[in-house]
Length: 553
Image (cartoon, rainbow, N blue to C red; front, top):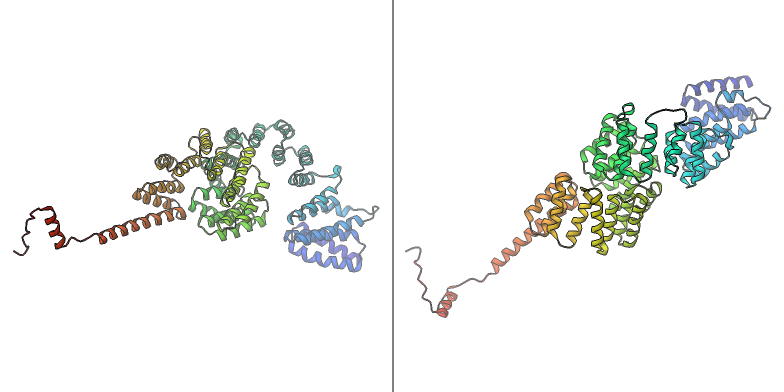
């Protein structure tokens, strides 16, 4: 029996090495039963077979069962007598650390942070390989345990100086750029590396304009010109600073250069949706789905496509699918929250926005959506508090200033709101949201001519559906109905799903019909002058009226 079992394990080892997953799964399951029924103390073979079987379960995404089998393998490993040789296990890359790391991976897939942290912390510090230190660093960072997270990231960089994701996270945790550069430059003389670290550091330090300039310079360096990862970073930097047009253009360049690129495409879809580029958004969503269905980005892109068409129920479903694939996907949480808000589920939407804010406290969009929900629920003070926090955390960006200005409108603090909008325009002279804010304030004060002036200048620069709708509203309020109809139609040509423009057209047509009806009523109610009335008028005025010649004479 021992000889037969050794042969089976050897064959199993061979199939596992050849990555015959389904074959390994069936044979390992049978072999486990053979061992348990005939030789339950054969811990070496037991550990090895459990490990192979758990690997196949993990590949099949049966994470809960895989974790259980890995723990059985770990138990068998610990039961092996210290005097017994473990050569076969070493050859098969099965060790206590390897098994614990795989249990951590299963716990991560199951969102069991406590279990993941406990299993990694059970590995002695001196025995931790870089992948274990990296796992611990991420878990500590999630729990806002910054000091141990920094220590673990540094441990990874000491062993692997070019682990740039660790370098970036150190910057996010507040480590000085020079310290990070000294860690990543060990044994490396890449001329672009210090600039790369500094570009990320500028973004972390809220020096957004300098960060954009640094990324633009990096993308043009001959050795790394038009690198897709840097293009993605540059596009993201444009978005952070509020330059959405440049962000769209950079993402478009990236997508044309590498149609199979996934990272950041959810943000690209959001920008296209906001800029009302429905056909481009639909094409992007369809193309991404041909690339992958196991990443959240294609699902988010499809969700924004549904949202742009007004199908908010479908958008919620697609966003939920994206969060199932990656619970930390910020754009999926924002998409789901916005769609729920449009469906009237404001309180549930707020929970999603707060979850996104917790994961990405420097994403201004999170603050924007929360403020919008609070204003919708008439929670004015809370909206003001969140808008002030946005400026404190993100920095005095034009969009953040406009956000606070908008939160002041319900209290009619128009003068303060104007100052904030003008401050935003001083930073970025053609900032569309600031122009819209000034126009909105002018309308609320019934200064429609001022609003029309703002909007006509803005349309020459931007020409969005929203701007045309606002201008049409101003024309309607000044009784310039033909101009209002023209701009409502222009708004609908740019965005056929613009509800405000559709309602505006109905409002104009309804007003015109009402005016026409009143005119007809006035004509019907006008008194008729009879022959008796005419004679009475002639006698009262003593005027001899000429007799009209009959038409038939």
